[in-house]
Image 1 (cartoon, each protein chain N blue to C red):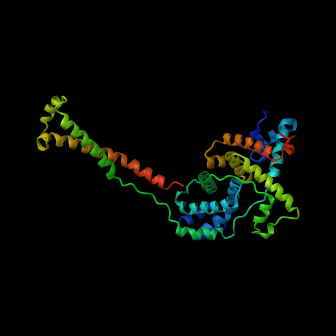
Image 2 (cartoon, rainbow over the protein chains, first blue to last red):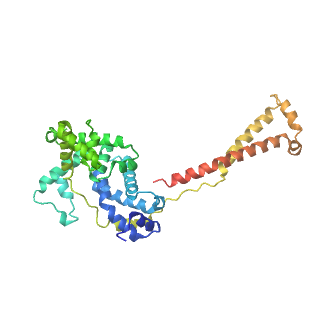
Image 3 (cartoon, rainbow over the protein chains, first blue to last red):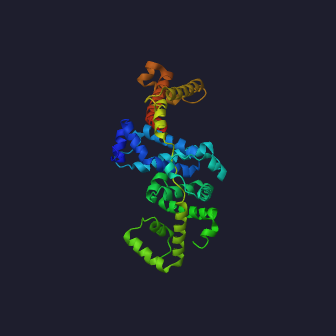
Length: 192
Length: 162
């Protein structure tokens, strides 16, 4: 079952096969979680929305286009809509996490990924990048996360966000310009 | 070749065709502006790549499956093909208009129309008032039945919207 394609697994999920659903979940959990996390900048929200996204996949399996549909794109569409809906409903405000807060709340879920000795340095940089991403407007953040972190093609992103490719590319350029200003103008001053 | 950031973006993310890539590489050797932009993309990419991948809780799947039986799937409210509510609204409104005309007919000149209608056999059977009620009843039903499929599909679509 692990080697089955997404469509084959979805056909089984349609028949409420939880094993197939688990395989699909394991295949995409990291990608979807990181997408939502980068978008919302909150682990708790990302955790909730990850569950919500896959719950919707379970109940909406009959709405997937089994003929010509792309499961990955469909899944990202659900994740994006779920995230956007929650963000607009609750109107989350972004808060900057300071290092002490990060240290206090960090959960070493997977010990093999614990950071090396330069933990503070890495935390500073991580915090900087996260803050810079948070400061971006949602549609800039969306395109940068989907393009750079999720490594989707512009064509796929266009289908997911229902936005023309040219608009997405323009947003991407503007988004990384904004990111440059928020990160460290000096570091990028001799480029672009 | 014109400076085209979109093309450089394709090259950076390895989405350019071999021919496009080759042309862009040639262009880059001569164009300092595009070289700077590629350097900027490289640096930005390297910086963003330093963000580590996050992991969800290890029992997330189990939590999803636990919640699924408790959560009722959203089912569509199925609008019946013939809905009573609009039918009664239309019939009631028409009935009011008929009553208005009936009581006002002495004041408005409907006599020429009434004369021609008197010759129709149904008028004899159910009377002028009954005839008008029948007309409006039929029109009201027709309008309701015409609108009902639209209402049915609209309700079904809305209820299943993600």
